[in-house]
Image (cartoon, rainbow, N blue to C red; front, side):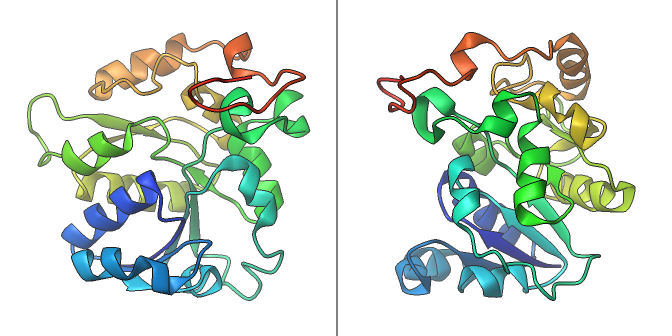
Length: 231
């Protein structure tokens, strides 16, 4: 499968490595230009490209950049890209730590619904609840005891099935987490966030989630701060 990745930070880098190890053709981009990705390209065999090239790379496009930066992507990023191309959002909203206030999310929209509206495309929410190093290092063959599971949410059954298959192929069980409007169950502050549960554990955590965003994950008048000193 041909996979474009927009964003080469911790999660983007981990996915580049995992997808390449699984035999996929990967086209990776960042905000600083393809020349800055030479080391990652050499290490993995991925192709370093521009964001627009990554968006047009093939069957799946993963958008994995800071939430606030979604608004800075080219408005025509997906212009001309076929509707059957699956777009994956890995992002999390960190208002006190990095992103500042995003009104739509603060008013109750799920993070990925907000992303979908900015991109003008349906998205599938995945790969957002696991530490990048764990994503890179802790994958196991199907059926292995203690295999970590990841929640996957989305409105399009076909797109969600494709992403769930990718999750499995890179070493994790996939759990259907419902529609995009239910993806709040895997946002920061919920029981499934950053905890390496197996499939049954993920299902229990999703069921135990509470929709109201806790104060730690809401913006303040001083937002944003830093991860060391959140505002």
